[in-house]
Image 1: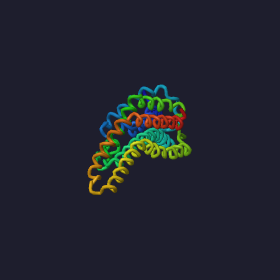
Image 2: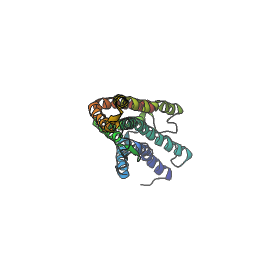
Image 3: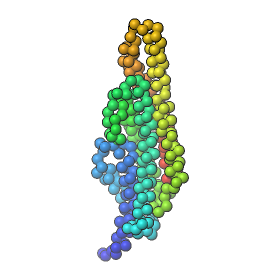
Image 4: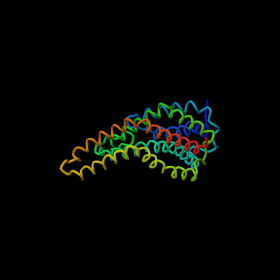
Length: 257
């Protein structure tokens, strides 16, 4: 069986462009983008998903793979995958920001460790919340829903030179404020309670300076913060689930699903 150069490039493009969209997602999406997850594993998952969905992809545009239009199509596919993953990154940043706020308020800001997802130093409390959010994300099959939305996007947002628009990017930029607002709202009950404890210590120290109340108050503040995290963890997960739901709704809006 003989193929011309154009036919061979068309066969390659049939697999290459969907693979770019799917692999771009798995390289950045939370949980899978962790440094503890090998790159070969992410590429293997992208390869298998592309191989499965390739027969159901609508006809590709009549654009040569090795051309300016072909490069623009590749960039569009990469942008679609990266934007979908970036929205979920902002959702998980809610847990990170909330955990940092809680850690600093209870005096555990110095207890830091390297976040495997971002590679930077974050407080241990923030890491605990991020891990809890990751487990919740997997328990509700969020990864499967994300894959389903990405596969559906090949019909609603077909492979072409025209894909995401400036309006889509502005919607994402405007929604990014939710990342900071959600983090503060998530940490607010614990922060406010610890603040009242510190205010009471300040009043006691002013009334009886000889007690050295702040020497005792530091471990009490840490213990109080840990107890509050244990008690309010269900509420934290509920708040995270609401932000996660809004993130998926934004992904549906961007992918036209």
